[in-house]
Length: 259
Figure 1 (cartoon, one colour):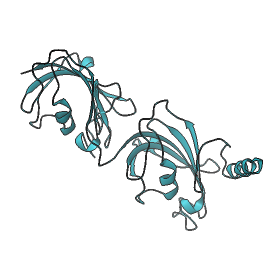
Figure 2 (cartoon, rainbow, N blue to C red):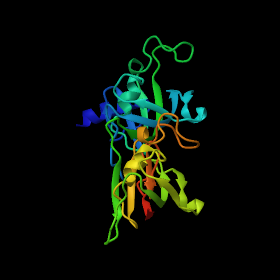
Figure 3 (cartoon, rainbow, N blue to C red):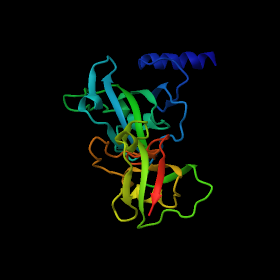
Figure 4 (cartoon, rainbow, N blue to C red):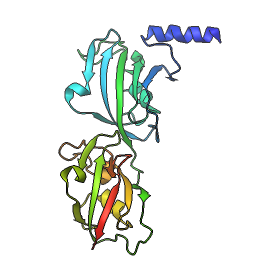
């Protein structure tokens, strides 16, 4: 056991990372230096992920940065669309987790390098912050927080509804709130006035009910996003979550009237 620990620390030092209990995925060294207390879901093959990153060489020289570009990167895990080492390093990551991924040359740009930007046989280091993740198989998820004892009628398609909401992304970033605007949101249900996920999430609600709705990107604002709302993002509503998934674990929708 002592030999194994010493050997691991030697390899970690060679890759300029600390010896710690973080997982080693193949030849990729992962340092999970900030893990959220709650992790309802981990990134896996077939998932889309949205993340910020700073990429450097082993000596610390900057290679690339999504922060400098002003936009997080969206990628698909396990389908060969990402650098092989990044693909491995993102596996098992939670939303709001931060990790350092050290990638050996053969899982980066190999012996050929990448033009004048990455020299041959260069190891790379990615500091990643995962903001969101989703899968094409995801459905709109609703959770009732509270409901009135007497519910004489629930929301159906073509109903006109009036409700309050808080909208956030999966990482907790707020994107909209009817409370802040000090006015309810009024709309028809099932007539294309709302994003598809919200249309689905409101169905079956009672007057006075509070509901949490999580909406995947493709049933929210999709690839283009909306205004300041990130593209390809999950959203929570209401207290609701809205960002390519109505995101907001604390989001709920409080329904006031159904006509």
